Length: 111
Image (cartoon, rainbow, N blue to C red; front, top):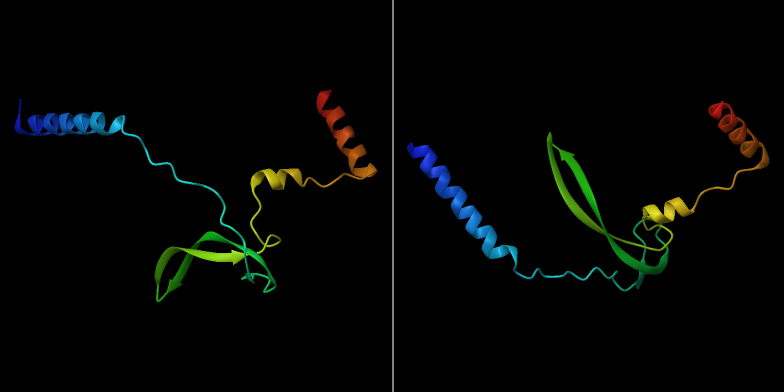
């Protein structure tokens, strides 16, 4: 065995031991309850309403250098970002003409 093989064998053994020691340790559970709404002025629409804090990723470029970070904005219920489930629930209703065209295209696809 060469020097590098011995080095990697020791490194793998140490990682394996560390994994075994921490593998069964109980993990801390973070509470994911939304923050309580508070009265204030919405950062987006500037109306006074009940607000909740939301975190957004922000990128800014100045003097050719980019900086990345997170910003907390306090938004009302109307301006708050929608979850995917809420977006899917807001499917617009089709009128008769749109529905007829949709059915015609589905029939053509089945032929």
